[in-house]
Length: 73
Image 1 (cartoon, rainbow, N blue to C red):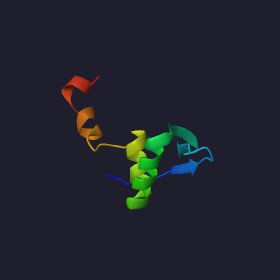
Image 2 (cartoon, one colour):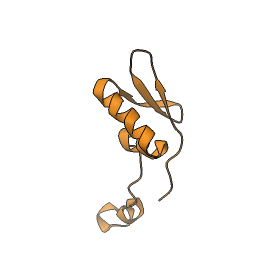
Image 3 (tube, rainbow, N blue to C red):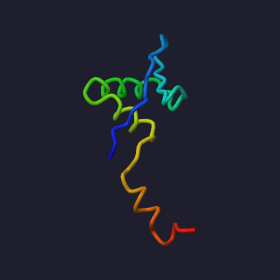
């Protein structure tokens, strides 16, 4: 599975964290969620953490799901 890329995050003065993917806003986190996000960023791979928090990541089964008879058209 390829590594996620293209994510950035900005911390605003009021404590809001905005995560962008290729320049488009993907998530806005506030309060305790923003604090947990920043703690995870410090502890792990930032691109992978942002992909997981935004739900914008591949799960590795797209190719097999596409070939399933139910999904053929």
